[in-house]
Length: 341
Image (cartoon, rainbow, N blue to C red; front, side):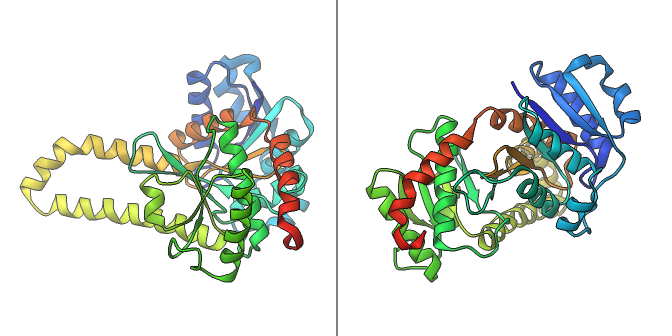
């Protein structure tokens, strides 16, 4: 089991939430080993009981949400994020980094410090979203790292996600393009071109491309991977999150409107809270797919529970060794892309 690096200063809730999550994760997972990057004076007393399962990199410097990502990565070399990325890059025993810090800084730092897998043009953010069927989820990429994409970028996203799912045990993931309709003629020119290229890959037996998909179909568990550019993928993700918040706020208003509704809430309250927490955890931890080592981004508002969830997710991706799989798959795909590559 490779070690996980945790940026303890990033995120809205900072060191208290990161440290509480780290301690809980260590207690729940005896095989977990962490490198905690943050204020050693505060961290050390809280993790002393775990002995050599925890290393501490001391710093009080953080990259804030309003700093320019590239400038911050280049100049704040003693920040928790940069120090953590350096540990991930230089040490063979480190398999992943987890941070709730500035999304721009985490992505830029991963790109600059860790680097891309050979053949990858652009790494992509890949959250998992729940479906209406218990135990099933789908992968959405890109969810915000690349606003403007070519058809080839979309194809690469599909190939990378396909290899990820195969590495985690899914033999033939169902891959689809996010679109306004299922017909092959729908969408803008980039999506139409990507559709044609993915059909080539399907006919060559490389990928299980099932065509275009509308958002509701993904939540019905009709696909395993949804491919989009970063703009529309991020709109999809944020619309989903906003819709969930709207529904739960509306339920609260309905419950408060009458005595009978309050009585009903007594029976449903616990289950609704559990449902909300489970679904929120699904979208909390997002891998930056396409880097030479795994960088996992948490929500900026990550609390103890979400930190635990992200660390346990990082444990699963740290040992997947995706580099070779993705590199080989992209090399196989390149001749089929022709002049588009």
